[in-house]
Image (cartoon, rainbow, N blue to C red):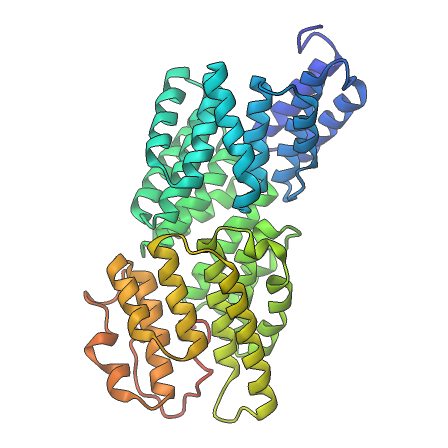
Length: 449
């Protein structure tokens, strides 16, 4: 068998890989497809598998959730081989955020790495299983191995998994730190357009949740200026829309949202959440409700990690509350009740993974059942998450005000323990507003723009 790079297949493989690094995904797909048309899968499964791996990666960067290339590559490769182990890790990442489908490929990849002693496969397996199980020790071991190998690809992969895990643990400052280190490393390797833009998503999200909004704006704008691949660009624009909405700039939020159209469930749910909240903020909760069907009937909603699914359900529950007002008729109230039952059913189908997930669940139930706000507030207080605590206080206060319970709505228990979170608008404090209807508070932040 000829070595890659000495014939047409090798040249096309190298060209596809170069396009993957440069961010020219469409041209890379053309090279990989041409290579696959030339190679004989049965006689040369390893080279066919590598081309399928490259094409699958490039397609994902153009915002598809299709994993058929990777599944085909795994079928071609012999059990226990190092290349199969690497492909299993790639396939499993493509299956995320559907954790149950990704679990077996992740675990097999790690087992192959341990058994063969292949450090590269072991690193990917450690990252995969560690991020899935929340095991920071595995990620520490993976980083040490990657540094020993001095592989630019692995050294760029490690901070992505670390940022993902810190985000789930709600350690936003640590997320920003590891993602920022990764962005600087990407620039050093000349990968700012691809890997740097991917890491900018985690840095931007962490900065938003930490209340460092000006820094978040700078990171997101820099990522977009780098002409990132479509998938990363859409994610960055979704974050721009979320931040604009938090600031009350509905025009900027709408502009960012218009540029986030996507065909895959992986990017559907953050966009769905943003679209719902924007529609409510614009005073059109019925339009927001029309978006619910697509999300609630998508099977992926109950297969992704529950910490990612429940914030979407909370947004949908807020939509239902905003549809109601003192003038809501019987028919509308019945439709809202039916929607709330649908949300409760999806919630029941999700597992509960840790204290963060339980906090989201208590907030969801308080919104649906019109009760349990004290429990929900206490959950966020114990987690010391000022951003989510402020959201919970705001929604709870408005619910109690709508019910006429002024003492509980405005009492000490309704105030953050240490004032507003960084960047939190002053107008989020509960206040009496006789002319304000039950549905006017919308997405959880008052209109300030």
